[in-house]
Length: 615
Image (cartoon, rainbow, N blue to C red; front, side, top):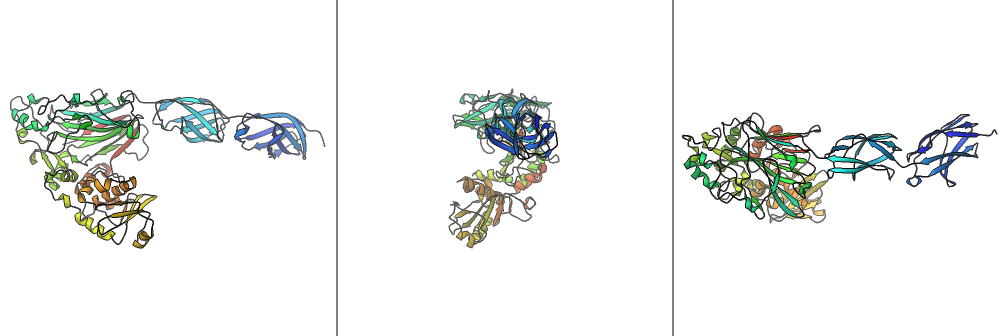
């Protein structure tokens, strides 16, 4: 046998993933094993993939994390005889050298490439403690999509290869300095000099406490105080501009001392404030989830301004009927805004309809199908909706005081814009069925509206279980007792025999569901455990939409079957959906069941616009 020599190995440094190598020398064609040793102990024996007289090619498999940092000697077996060499390799931890981008928005979604060495086989890339989405990788680079940040500022970026972390590089999450919220009245057709106001109020829960803020014309949030109640009972700004009879009629709109949180809106153009001022510097303890700034953006049209009375435990919002604020023409957008600049917002008709509003959020990288615009459709005016709803719920109309309807004389200004529905007496708003039922002073047959359907359902549930599908993996089945108790067991039990054989009930509706609870989505349908509340939501939505049966579901919803012809359902909700963009509306509190609500959720929007649409 001729003597073999070993000149070099083409690669002396390997990562944990191993890789190909080539040894050069002489008389190598009969090599049958390359043994890599540490301290005389074999770490990995490799059978050559090919040999020639001058080369040996092979592939190292992955190494254990404990081998990192070790230098391995190489023994080559020629026809089974070990031949000692002076060749060595070193096993290296993953190493990062540069990032293709060192900053990005806190909402994540940025494409970043990590450059370095020994990165093959990376199973995780962390930005701080949050994993990024890996889109591709080689031994010298990993491409990722950044995750959403936890806080603004720098985080360490590391690559994990077989539980071995690389060195860290710095990446900074950034907040936007300007997110304009614009109020636009161009489509409203308002008479010249009609006053329009915006009010932004919200709550932040920090450390178990509820903290209430209002936002000024510069977009700066201020903690509410009872000292904000600087306006006396029966008084309001600009009263000298309207007729004395109107001033007298409107005094009842201000029944308590109140705070003026109004931001005047420029009706000749638009008014913009900066939502980015809602931040941790201005609101200590601002966070995400329940610690977000959560509230409403109110809009009012006409002289009567919205009164908010600050209390020691929060504030009293204006009412829809028979109280402070009743004679203000107003509506609102519900929204939350958090420390990561995530906005969640929606239009709503849960309580009333007063103004035709659309909400549009401009998204920097909106995914296909992401909702960005909600509200009434372009062909439906405010007066169209008022007439539709007032025909159904005449008892729930709120009319402006007759004294304010008098055409002003001399230099006096009108109280309300002349294009509200004056033909019907000056309707400011129509109350939803829930609000009609909630006001005992309003006489209505709506308090028994669903009674016959409820009674028929309970009769059926005496012998056949009610099956409620909450999620793909969560189903509850219930049977009724003669006393009106509904007992729910976990699982899908569609027969009385199967239900009786199942384990004991997890929760129950001890009181029979009422029509009022369906209208208001409260009481039995909104109490108890999380499971009980989730089931209550589906049941309330099913009755409201006219599809209550022995099988109710929050998934795989038959949206086209909602509000069936000849059925018993909420005509208010039906109208709300019929005339809204994409037929999405909050016609009742649980309209998010089956994703029928007009909810927009965007991270770090470029802009937010609310339009008061045509009267």
